[in-house]
Image (cartoon, rainbow, N blue to C red; front, side, top):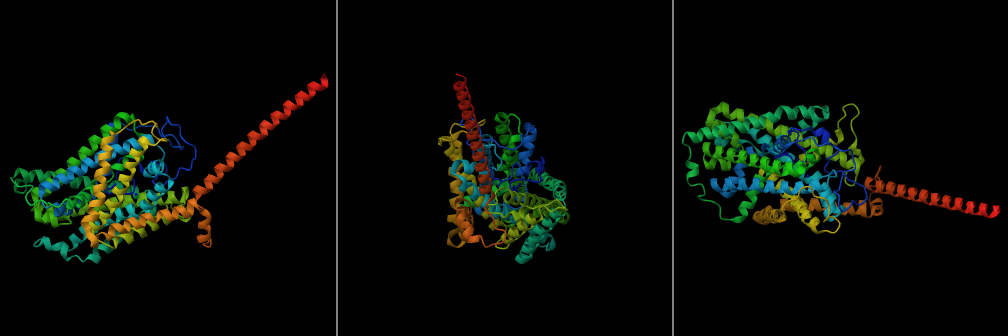
Length: 558
C-alpha cells in the first residue's frame, strides 16, 4: 500500500538516499512469485531473481530509514493531534508513543524481511501466513486505497500552504486559511497531482530530478524550525509547558484518532524491507539501524512540536493546518511566513512526486507479473519516453477521486486506518508463522521478542477500532468505505484465480480479455513438469529396452 511518507504509502521514497530504480522490479509491492516449489523447512523463503550483493552498513542503513520516514506530515499533523488531545503534554506523549510503535513495527518487519526474502513485501508475508487470497487483497488495497489516499493527503497539504500564501493577511493571519474556499484547495490539490503525472511522463529522469531538488527543502525547514524553537525557549517562552497536561482529554478514543495523525508522519518505517537484501550482516545491523533511526526521527518530531508550542499559542497550533507558516510569521515576520510556506510546498510536491513515481511502477508490475486486478494494458512502457504513461494516468485518476471527498484530516485518518489495518494483519501473520507447521522452522536471521509482536498487534487493534467508535455513526462511513473497497478483492480473486472459468463467462465478452498471468505461469510450470516426467519415462523405457535387447543377445549367443 510510499508510500515515504512519513509520506510514502507507496512503498518507496524518492527522497531516500538509495536508488529507487535499483529496487523497482525486485521490491515491487504487488509482484507475484508464482513458484510452486516449497522451501526447505530450514531455509528462508528466498527470491528466485538475481542475487543482490549486500553493501549497506550501519550508517547507510540509518540514512535510508530516516530518509524514508521524515516527510511533510510534521508540517500538517501537529494541529489535528493537539486538537484531539487538548494539551501540550498529551500531544508530545502521542508523538513519542508513535515513534515507539513505529520502532517495534519496524523490528517485526525486520524478522519478516530476513525470513521471507522474496520480492513483494506484505504480499509475500500475508501469502505465507494466510494464503494467496490475503496477499492479493493487500495488493488490491494498496493500489486503490493506501497509495492514492496517501498521495491525495499530501497534495492537500501542498494546496493548503499554496492557498494560505494566496490569502495571507499579515494583519489577521488567523483568518487567512478560513478565507480560502474548500473547492479551491481541492482544485489546487488535483492540479499538483497532474503536474507531477505529466512531469513523470515526460522522461525517466524527471521524477528523480524533482526528488533531489525538493528533498533539501524539508530538511532545511525542519532544521530551522527546531533552531527557532530552542531560541524561543532561551528567551523564556515556556508558558505553554508550565501546566502541560492541563485540560487534557479524558476520552480514550480521542487518543486513538490523535495517534492516527501522528503515525501518518511516521509512515515509511515498513519500507526498510524493500532494501533489506542490501544490508550487510542484517542480524547485527538491522536492530541497531532501526533503533537508532527511529529514535532520531522521534526526537526530531518531538523537538519540532516543542518549537511550535514554544513559539505559538496552543490555540493557534491546534486550529492551524499550516502551523509552519504561523511559526515563520511569529519568529521572522511576513518574509518568514512565506519562506516556511514555500519550503513546505517544495517538500510536499517532492513527496507527491515520490508517491506517484512508485505507484506507477506498482501498477505496471501488477499488470505485467500477475494481471489479477490490473489488465496488461497498463503495463506498457512508452517507447519514446520509456515511462509508464498509461500507469501514470491511472494513478492520477485514482488519486484525484480520493482528493474530492474531504480535507487533510479526513484523508490522513483513512490512510492511517488502511495502513495500520494491514500492518496489524502482517505482524499477526508473523506470530502465526512462529507456530505454523510449514513455517515454524524457517531460518530467521533476526527474531523479535514475541511478546513485543503481540503487544504491537494489541495496540494496532485499538488503533483500528478506536477511531471507528470515536467517529460515531455519522463519521464511520469513511472507514466502512475503505473496508468495502478492500473486500472487493475477494470476489475478484475468486473469479480470476480460484474459478477462472467463471471469470471467462462473466467478462469473456470484453475485447482482449485473458486469464490472469499467474494462471498462465502455473500452466507453463505444469507443462514443464509434464514434459520432464515424459522425458524421464521415455528414458526409463529406453533403458528397459536396452536391457531387454542385451538379455536377448545373450540368449542368442548361448
